[in-house]
Image 1: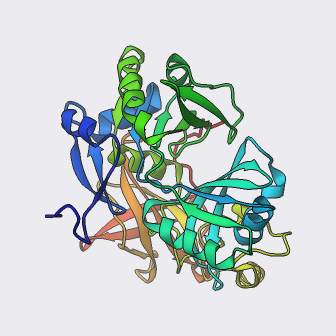
Image 2 (image 1 turned 90 degrees about the horizontal axis):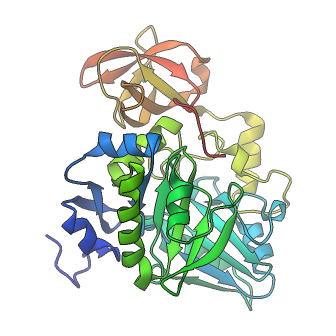
Length: 373
C-alpha cells in the first residue's frame, strides 16, 4: 500500500478520478498509478477499437521537459542521437539519449519550437535521468527544466482518430511527426501526429487543468465513432505487434540502438552526440546480438526473459517482450539473439515456455501492417 506523501507514493494523472469512475483496473507503471484496462471491454476490445476505429489513452505518465536559451536546439542536437537539423519548428523527432558506452538512457520525442526552445517527452521513469544528464552538459544560458505536472498527455489512435480530434476543435491537418498548438476550453493543447500503435494517430498535450474536460469530451464523441477508452494493456499489445521497443525491455543501458535495430534514429554523420564513439565502433564491428521478431507456430504466449534455442537446443538468446496478438490470434515476441547464430528471416527456432518448447519463426517486425503515415 502506498501512503500519500511517502517516498514510494505513486503519482496520479489528472484523469485519475475518471479512470476510477470507468471501472479501470489500475496498476503501478513508471512510478505512476495508471489504467491497464477498463470495465466492460478489456484489453482485446480496446486493442480492436484502435485497429478498427479509435482508442483514447491516458499517457500522462510520460515525462515533459523544456530546453530553452540561445541555441537550445543546437545544444540538444549535440546531446541526443537523431539529427535535429533535418527538421524545423513545428516538427518532432524520435531520438535517443545514450550514455558514453552506447547504452540507451531513454528514447524520447523532441519537439522543435524554435532555435531557442525544444520540448522533450521522455518515458516516465527516465525523465529525471534525462533532465539530469542534459543539465550536467548544458552551457551557461541553457536551462533544462522538468515539467511533468504542467501537462497531461492523451493519445488518440486509430483510423478514425482525425475525426475525433477535429470533433473537439483541435488541428488535425498535420504531416507525420508534425505538431501544432491549439486550444480547448480556452487553454492550450499541443497536438502531434504521432503515436505508439502503428495506426494514424495523435498525441495531445493539454495544460494539466484542461486534461479532464478534454478527456471527457473525447470519450463522449468517441462512442459515436465506435471508439472507447484504452489502457496500457492494449497499448502494449499494439506496440508489440508493430515491433516498437519498450525502454527497459527492448532498449536500455545494456541494449544499444545498434542491437535494437534503432540505428535509423542515429545521426551517424553528426560530429557529436552522447555515446557516439562507442556506437560508431559497434556499428563498424557489428553487434554481438540483434533484436528479432518471433512468431509462435504453436499454442503458447511468449513473455520476457524466456530462453531462445536453435534447432540443436543450444541457447542463442533471450526474449525481451512478448504477448498474444489479438490481430493475428498468435503469440508474438521480440528477442535479442546472438549474431553468431547466423539467423535469417524465416528460420525456425524455439522458445522455452516454462519447460515446454514452443516453435517460433524468426521475422522482422512489424507483425501487422503499419498505417502511421
